[in-house]
Amino acid sequence: MRKVRTTTVEIIWRSAIAIFLLGISVVVIVPLLNLLALSLSDPARVSEVRGLTIVPKGLSLINYRVLAANPLFVRSIMNSVYITFVGTALNLLVTAMAAFAMTRPRLPFKRFFQVLIVVVMIFEPGLIPEYLVVKKIGLMGSLWAVILYKSVNVYYLIIMMRYFEEIPSSFIEAAQVDGASYMKILAKIVLPLSKPALATLGLFYGVFHWNEYFRASIYLTDPNKYPLQLILRQFVVLDDTASLIGSGALFSYDEAARLSYDALQASTIIVAMLPVLVIYPLILKYYARGVMEGGVKE
Amino acid sequence: MSGINAPARTLTARRPGTGLRKQEWSLLLLLAPALVYFLVYHIVPLFGMVMAFQDFRIIGKSPFVGLKHFKALFSSPSFMQVLANTLIISFMKIVLFFPLPIAFALMLNEVRGSFMRKFIQSTTYLPHFLSWVVIAGVWIAFLSPSTGGMNQLRGIFGLPAIDYMTDKGSIRWVLFASETWRSLGWDSIIYMAALASISPSLYESADLDGAGPLQKMRFITLPELTSTMVTVFILNMGFFLNAGFDQVFNMMNDSVISVVDILDTYVYRIGLLNMQYSISTAASLFKGVIGLVLILAAHKGSLKVTGKGMW
Image: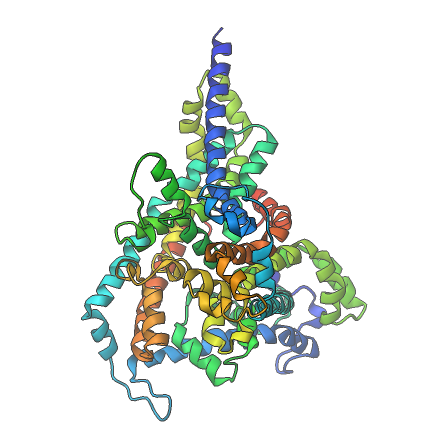
């Protein structure tokens, strides 16, 4: 009797919780779906799209076509893709090399380097001194200033060091006995064994580069080099519609005039988050699971 | 670490006075790119912070002026306001926010059915990966007084529209709400991991004793989560003066700048927009030193409570 009652209470309790959490999920995704709906709606019916609308009114790709016809916008996507790929590849290479060296017993001055890593982690240099150094070494205005910023994230370096420490040292010693150099051991033994760590950190570095806008805003001077997030900031956050629409000369004035800026801004937001959505399943697969199993310390 | 430090094979051990071996050079070579990066982006700028005590000049020697810029900062009402804003916003985003991911994890832990659980997790983790530019765009649209979802909801209840983004009374709560929107799910992961590691036998014996769900929560779950909670809280305290530059930078506007301007946005504005390099760096240095003390305290605190530090 008592057992049955507890179960009923429990079912109600769990259902209430599940409904509440689903409510939170709805709060998270409705604003995103709303922008998607706005961006896909027929311009003639855009005024029917309210803040909680999640189904497009009519269907039109005109906003995306306008964006695709804008040279500055297309250029910015290419810049972002370039920064993301080159930056991530460089991040992984430099981080893996450093992590490998740091986990070798033979590394000279190891204690000094360990202290250096902690110093980098806890002393934050000011914005202006960093800016002046970048200026001094001649990177101002170059995409490299943006790519090289955060070449090594010390937290990720430590995660990779922990990962490398797990690789049985007998593998490495055996290769050394065979006369393999450290470079060869890293390339042929350590990296192939570390694919999950490389994938996880690669995704994180990649998301970081794709989302970066601030260093781009202070180090780049030519709008043709701007990454997408910076164009997005100018267009959506600062509401500077002129810079984007003004140069979209491929469309007649009439067509531009009947477009809604809100819808065009929504489309820009959707494009800016698209790559993250595409790799999101991989992030869940590699990282979230790792954390759930308690393997990675944030 | 200590095990790694011990020489693995005496065969390649360096004899005293013979300099570095070829192998050791190759390790240093592998480390070199990271070292150059640390040097250029971290260490050199760190020494550059000496300009906080100078009148910085681009050409020629910058004369030392002692604490002039610090005195200027602390006698300026706008800097005091910035400091207050930083503390208030950090308090909201660290202290007020703190229990929310715990509650979220506890609730999620009660959800049976893996599809439902995965759906909730994958939707609520997502915003963590969006840039603050995107999030600001989403929230500006959502809170728009004319077309936004929030004001549509208010309309349903017959309430007048509010322009949250330009309202001084609301904007800090907008920061709090958007931070929650972004981090609630993601920050609950660490608690989910802690919950998953609680031995089921504890609950089984509680069941035998006839304990209800609330009693199990109070006497088993919460005590088992305590060390995780303490760690998270202490580590967050170490970053108290950050208050989230990217969020504030993308959500502030001229109408509300006086109540959301934080140390990092102030450093940016005074330094890069007004070109007052020295005074901006003085503010950075002030933030850095207090931040350092907080981080060291957090490290010590975390070591003491959980045996695990930050590094």
